[in-house]
Length: 214
Image (cartoon, rainbow, N blue to C red; front, side, top):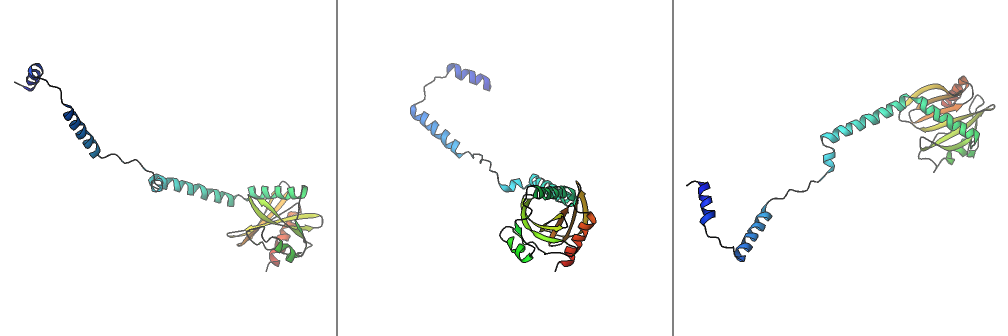
């Protein structure tokens, strides 16, 4: 008699009796114990280390490249900055103020910047060639407060924007919308002079500033 025949014989001729409640309880207990003994999968937890795995390193590298390119593009393209500086100069001429502290004395203008900036801009008084210091102001450029020194030569106004630099740069002259822009850096500060004065004369202003710098 094979297995199939034996199964058929038992189903047909075997006597069946309902299981007792005690047996049902024993089965339930064993089932519960076996279920409790089975290992349950631990919930998946995210860690910062997972973000900086292979994919995270690739993402970080991409972000680094983007930031580097942005900085390099900014440094390599001063025309965009020159446009913003010219706009700031025109705004000061049209609606003011051209200066918030009025003085040709550097010892009056320089201390005025204390507490208004997170750096100490150099300030020079009147310069050779007829460049007269009118005063200074703080103007928001690129989202941060920036020192601006206002000078005058004859009837022309010159704005000198000054903020920290991370490297030196030789003088360079640009022209934007009829205004001349001369910028340079001494390695500690960078300087951007903006005016409608003749470009050669604005370059002489820059030369006079550099010559008078201690």
